[in-house]
Length: 250
Image (cartoon, rainbow, N blue to C red; front, side, top):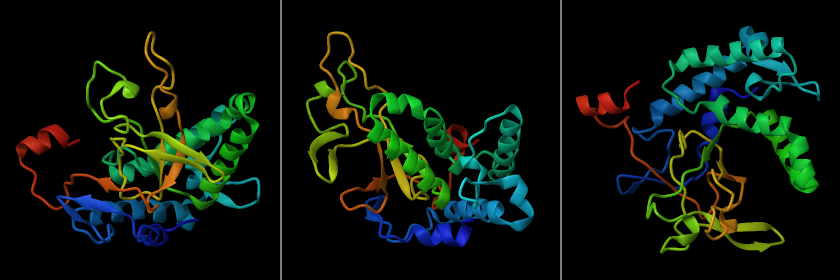
């Protein structure tokens, strides 16, 4: 089972993060992010503690143990057991981590449970999903997603914007895979994660509008991968006034 120290060490991977016009060289020590990183580390320490083994872990098909965030419930009782584990984690951060590690893990697990849908479309892609679920489960990855297109002309869809590369989309394909160019917004807890799931809320073709096929891509990208960067505001290194607390406090 992954510990907090292991998780935090994994974030020192040279990822590119900018804040207030400057680069945060080490997000685990930067005053804007260090305390949030430590809070996430405590979640993994809690899950890895021997006294929480039955509460927080389950047996995998290979005979190991994994965090219950990756559990695939098959019965009503399974749902209850998994829910209790997630409730225990939520109690540690009191709901202030809106996208804690269990959030996207649940998304990936749910996709895996519907593997037959993917197999009906493309067996190779279905196998990629199956393999990735096992990899993420066995390594207890902290994943997040980025799903919202940048705001621009709201009367037009992503394919109709003046800048064709405003929204993330596929621009090239080769033997190694696809190349994506453009931006996505709203990526929660992105300083604490290993990989980011690039997703799109709309793949379909609106009536009478161009097909948005360039944007119909899905995948997970390591946060330290060359060519990607993150930019965000923060709360940890400044004093919040009453307005901040009113709009952002929970």
